[in-house]
Length: 364
Image (tube, rainbow, N blue to C red; front, side, top):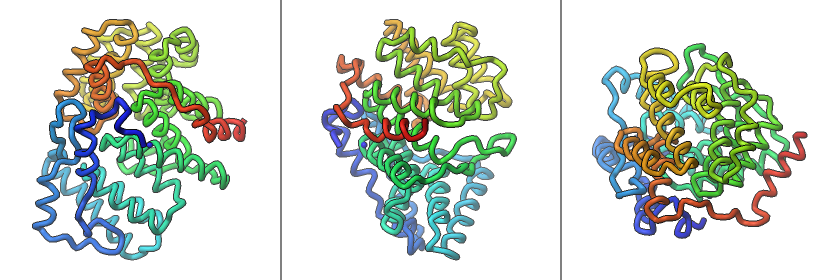
């Protein structure tokens, strides 16, 4: 997802470290065996999950409260037990990987998915989840490759869409995303992080035009599509695509995206969005929401040539501990580009978007 040495996503000196830190010697988390010793588990905890694209600062697993850690480890134990009971189950394999990722054990999750893909090599669901975690680990080319392959398999085999159950349910307990929407959402994000804004906009535009979406899914796609459009200088088009964004939308999860779109429309202020993201209660109070909001406002400033204002927001963001948040990752990528003087996107490779266009034609 591999031209890492020429992409603006990681300096040359960082890429080998990113690849090295993704190799996990933990037979415990691979299909077919998970009896890791305490010593090997402690060694894994001591190793960084990833490194900053800016300064090679190591990123490690999050610190949870004892209660939260017990709950997450209980979920992982239950997922492992389900896998042990039915090791031929693709679903059971997916849930072990998801539970590892919820604990911040992203390298183990990638290794788990990789071994599961040896058993289910044409699984778009496994490819979708591994692609997501490749993004977390700053391995954008591999992420794009996995997600494009998942989209191709779905297209060529006519695999129907399905609701994707939540591992961390919203307050209503109603899942809001699907297999197809998650593939397309993360595929576009991988392209965006590679600096391919036109390709990213094409992915998200296709999804908005061809998929049935609830309001949470719609604002997620609309937010990132707006960012890509404005980075290409297509602000008039980007603004026209916000006509359906309203304050009274049925949002259960993506509050920050929704608020940012209202800011982009000129219906709310930046200060309102930041205050709401940091307020306690449903729809605010989360560090991830703060990261999302900070990046969204920083990107808005970038496209308005306020480089100082954009840089200030992004530098505050990357000093936080939310290194796995997409807003944090995007801020790192943009700060690297700013420091290199390479903020403009690279042109997409001609002919590389055939799968996206085929998907669009098929679903019209």
